[in-house]
Amino acid sequence: MTYDIQPVASHFIDGAYVEDTGGTPIPVICQVSEEQIALVHAATPEIVERALASAKRAQRAWAAITGTERGRVLRRAADIIRERNYELSVLETNDTGKPLQETLVADATSAADALEYFGGIAGSLTGEHVQLGEDFVYTRREALGVCVGIGAWNYPTQIAAWKGAPALACGNAMIFKPSETTPLCALKVAEILHEAGAPAGIYNVIQGMGDVGNALITDPRVAKVSLTGSVPTGRKVYAAAAEGIRHVTMELGGKSPLVIFDDANLEDAVSGAILGNFYSSGQVCSNGTRVFVQSGIKAAFLARLTERLGDVKMGDPLDETVNFGPLVSHRQMETVQGFIAKGIAEGARLVAGGKREGDTGYYLQPTVFADVTDDMVIATDEIFGPVLSVLDFEDEAEVLARANATEFGLAAGVFTQDIGRAHRMVAGFEAGTCYINTYNLAPVEAPFGGSKLSGVGRENSKNAVDHYSEMKSVYVAMTPVEAPF
Image (cartoon, rainbow, N blue to C red; front, side, top):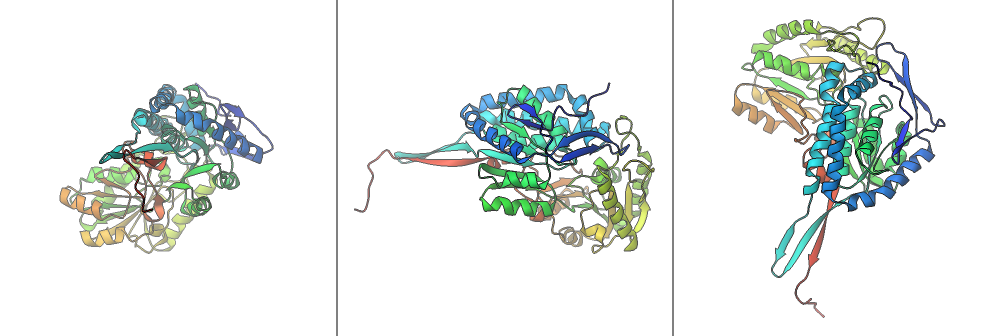
């Protein structure tokens, strides 16, 4: 079965697809053939204004209905997404290049989970009563208003829902701008939300580059900005949002440590390293790309990892037997190739991969470096590609200090059969999302986010509710009012 990749129009505003060809063309390039497969246009100022005006107009009525009613809409949308999982997964694969084997279980399904979760708790988002003698205080949880979501290119469907679900559950309207590299999937999320009963204007999607994002986040009608992206982009967005004292959530980059002790289950540790470096061809912000391996297990780890890489199957990502896809763009491929060259130049030992696969398509072999030192560029900079660096260590105190010696703090993981040591390590990690004997799982029930330069705030779980709403305190006096004069 084939599906039409070209969207009905570039934008989804006020409950309908909208086109304005006056905007800058944004071609969608196939990561396999390197040919254009779709085209959208960046939002013009008129499109931006339509999106903002419709969101502002629709939000008050949406916030006025009960949380249970809002939740019902989100849960319907989750059901629709699950019913259309295959179609949406094909679209995700065309948008990103990720293997269909992966997108079928990790993308639209995660979006559905978020909509179902926040739909389920929407009716419980209440305030509290505080008795103060005869007087009392009650609190009201209120929506912020119009929220802006700015997405990254690696998980376009998931991110559109991770930001939209809590925003809508709390009574906000959302304007979502996908990455210009992967503009297709968010449109389907908006279409499905509207089909499920979300009022026109409550979830709008508009395309564009940085200028469109800046127009949104600096508009006085916007109360909240949520970004998934790089640290340089985050700095700009944070500064722009600060001008209006807007609420901000940021999920930024990382250079996360994955620590493997001698007593770790070898097969599990290798699986964790694969998930933390080669899933989505390494294009995951929380990846554990600094793999610290204790000296006693290093040889066995490298041997088994190299052996497991023999099971990599590259090819057409729409073939469900393919388990390793191309990178998202030619630019990203060249960036990663540059890091591989730096690793070799700085003296790291190339254990596996390191080359482009084929003459067409943005395929890079899964790459493993050993004998990496803390000061090498491949150990300090975020690569965002299939490059795993193995660093040696001897003891717990040493590796914890080295693991934390980075400006990032998104994720961290440890493999060991000593549960006491596992808990000591995660208590010591300077990271917002930690793993024991696994890696890179992100259930919607758990908060996700980073510390240090890796982010502000949390996505998912009940914590996200606090980032999309605010509490109003109401003091009710039941006694006479006393004053000094």
